[in-house]
Structures are given as C-alpha cells and as structure tokens.
Amino acid sequence: MRATSVLRRLVCVEDAVVQGFSEEDGALVVAVKPRWRRPRCSQCGARMPNGRVLTEGRRWRHLDFGGIETYLACDVRRAYCRRCGGERTEAFPWADEPRARFTEDFDLLVAQLVQRMDKTAVQRTLDVTWRSVGRCVERVLRRFALDDPLEGLEQIGVDEISFRKGHRYLTLVSDLDRGRIVWGAEGKSSKTFDQFFESLGEERTEDLKTVCSDMSNAFLKVIKARVPNATYVVDRFHMQALVTEALDDVRRSELGSFPLGKGKGARWALLKNEDNLTGAQREKLSEVQGLNRRLYRAYLLKEQFRKILDRRQPNVVRVLLKKWCSWAKRSQLGPFSRVAKRIERHMEDLVAYIRTRLSNGLVEGLNLKVRLLIRRAFGFHSANAIVAMVRLCCSRLPLPSSRKVLTLD
Image (cartoon, rainbow, N blue to C red; front, side):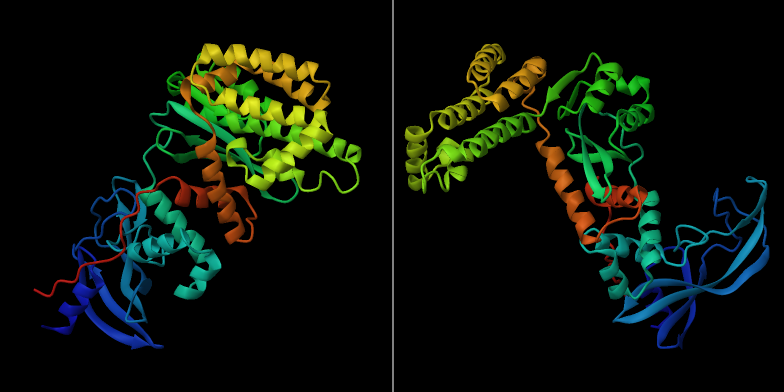
C-alpha cells in the first residue's frame, strides 16, 4: 500500500485526497485537496467556477499522529458565487469555516477537553494559544448546538449566580423536564429575566405550565406579568433555609442566657434534622430544653415546618401552614414572626410545591457545575464567555466522539 493511501486513512477526512507529505520544523505536513474539482462556496455550498488562488499552502492543525504535530495543507481559492452574488472563499471538507485554522476533528477534541479541564491546561496539552481554545469552542457550539433550546419548554426553573466580584450576576433558566440550562444572560433584575420571555416569544410562553424559583421579587414580578396562567412554585429549600436562619438568629441571641460552660456545641444539634441526630446531640437538645425554653421552641418550629412540607395532601398542608404561622407569630420570637409573614404572602405558591413536587434542586445542582466552571477557569472577564462555557458543559450538547476507526482494506 502506498504511503499516501495510508495517510489518507490516518487523516480520516471524507472527500479529501492526499497528494503527499513533508516534514517541516518537526511537524508532519500532509498535502491534501478536496475530492471535487470545482470549488464550492463556503456560504451556500454551491459550485463556483475556478477562481484565483488566495493563499498557497494554507495549514490547518489536525489531530496528532503518535505525539507529532500534524497539519493539513492546501491552496485556498476564491471565486464568484452566483447564488450569493459575490466573491466567496471556497469550502473545505475538513474545516467548519473558511477562516478557521483548525480542522473539525481538532475543534471537537478541544471542546471535549474543555468540558473537563480549564482552558489553560488544554492550551498547554495541545500546544495552542489560549484564544484559539475559545474560538474552537465557539465553532463547535455553532456546529452542534441544538436547533432551538427553548423549543418544547413546559416546566422551567430560574435562579441567579454570581460569576465575578463587584456584584456581577448571571440569570440562568433551566428546563426541569430535560435537566439542562437553556438560557443565560448577565444581571439578575426583572429586566434581565424579561429578556428570556422576549426570546421565548408569546406563543411558546403560553405553553409554559410551571415556573419554579426562589422568592426574588424581580423574578416574581415578571412571572406574574408574563405567565399569569402558569403555576408558580416557591422553591421549598429556599423557604426552609429561611426558617433555619431564623432558628440560628434565635440561637445567637440566646447564647448569653446560658450558664457558664453550658450550651456550647448546641448549634449543630439544633440545625440537624431530628431523624439524623446522634446520641450526644440528643443529649445536647435535652440540655437546651431544660435551660432555654425559647431556643427549644424555635427548634420545634423548625422541625414542625419541615414535617409539614414532607406531607403529600395540599389541603392538609395549607391548614397546617396557617396553624404554624399563627404559632410562629405568637411565639414571641422576632425572626420566626417575620418568616411567618413571608410564608403567608407565598402560601399558595408553597402549596403548589406539594401538588407538583417540583423544586429548584435541579437548578441548584446545575449552578454548582457553573460555579465549578468559574473556579476552574479562575474567573471569567465577560458574561458571554461564561454563557458559552455553560452551553458547552451544562446544556447536554450532543458532541460525538472524536475517535476514528482505521481501515486498511
């Protein structure tokens, strides 16, 4: 078998003909050309007449062979395209775009590494520039991105995340049915969230059945105005966190009333769920019950609230929540009285959680991945950069394998 035939199978690019190879500066340069004779337009794919040579021997970085840098080299022609009505650079079967300096296979390898590594590590591993890593990712996103990630949305969750110091936030919208982030933009105001519904359009907005979020007034204002017929669900864990914070506020205010040496280490026993307490923690709770009835009352309120939300009957939960709010306001505990008033304002939205059993748990899990991306990259300078990385890593982008099968027949 001829060396050019072996190289053609190693290069593994459809519609490419290998003409020869050479060694330049320790790299393998494979001379190739498209299988078709007449150049094809890089914009519309139409055939064009033979034009002038724009660049001789342009190189595209390809997958390495045995650790040796490999490049594809070919003359680039430019011709008049009748369909587009102007001069266009010809298309190549191994490159996504006419200005790209990397093959499609190399772009795909970069994107797969970026999903698990920071860009600096990818740069050093593949010996490319830091900016080239970003450009490869952008081309892969344009090539494999879903046709319309906002299509078919019925249940969504919305939350904000800080991506840089100086109160720089990102609003992310997730598809709760398919478990992926479908939209993101800088900011956390109602104006930012309203941009999502502008992108969604009125017709698809009417298809939304459930919207889940925390109790942010900015989000709630837009939800009530844009999707008044959809079920709004207050995230259970955000509400439960408010009750837990109220308990911790009471604990801090009551520390001075404990005798010297008493009450130490009671914090974790108070914050922990009753079912998960150890023997020592149960003893500590018994000590708190005997020494400070106000703090123990706050603990009972916290536990009772958690047990109410574990129930499955919406009407029963509504009644129990009203009784709990009444108890919290009569408890003479300021933090719990304030939380009770807030729960009363969102009573029906909290009962909606009992009916749907939806929460922002999936959204918080995706936010954790986003925080990992930010930390792995040691921060991002712009919101567009982090949104592109989120689309690559958290939107279940269907990237194929970059591995090829060698056939020598």
